[in-house]
Length: 307
Image (tube, rainbow, N blue to C red; front, side, top):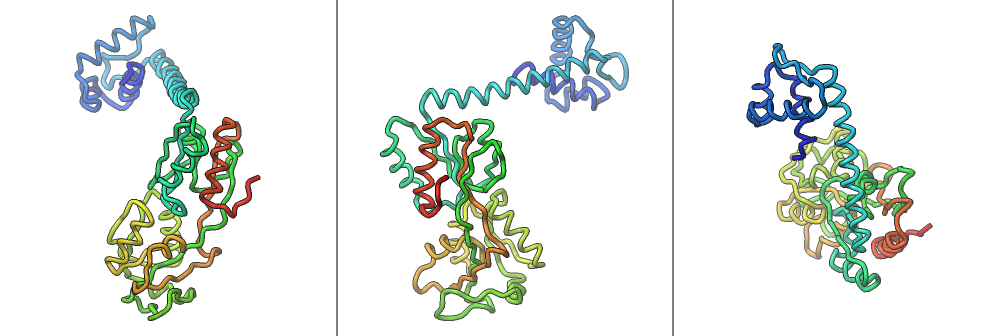
């Protein structure tokens, strides 16, 4: 930990504690170390930072001002670190791409091969994320391109995909199951039959599972969450083996189900539940990132028009 970060944590904790010993216990530091660090900082700044001989201890006015300004320095250092990551990647001609786990039209290895063939001087870092990707990952420089949830951030160039249709898997143990057909018709009345079904969920941080949770709650459907898997495809494969249900994209479900699998799919109308997905990168991204983004879009969703 940097000295600036440690001093900020000490000054913040002082405002919540009665003694330096209590501060030391909460931060897992020794009390003599904290006292020595405060003495060094008071000598450096030429002001008293802490009222040590009062109970409870407290920051002086100077201590509050120093703490506030140290936090500004901390923010600037963090921004510098994030910018340096982006600059280093740019200098090394590395492009970092985050893809949500719903991307399955091409496997990651297929995508990697085609990108390399088209951009041989560029190094790629592909990350298949099962958790939540945010627009901050692009703005901070952590990632150059994201394929996942659609945002509405003017700092980003956003190319929406077609709405992703979702389906619910219905095992033969479900009252709605119909022998010899793949698709079971949807109706609001049918949803009540899903109460108390065993359900295999995707990682709770994924935007798919967040949408599903809201959908189930809005429709007052109570399910038994028996398993959590890192991505949607694994959730489908696991649900089939456990004779359970799950919700995924129709494309993923159809790619996993095989002849003889005793399951139906109940397509959910897009106005009931669907996913808004997009490919996103910064508006002021480098020309190379934009070219890679356009190529990636054609690989994942060739029907989407690039504007």
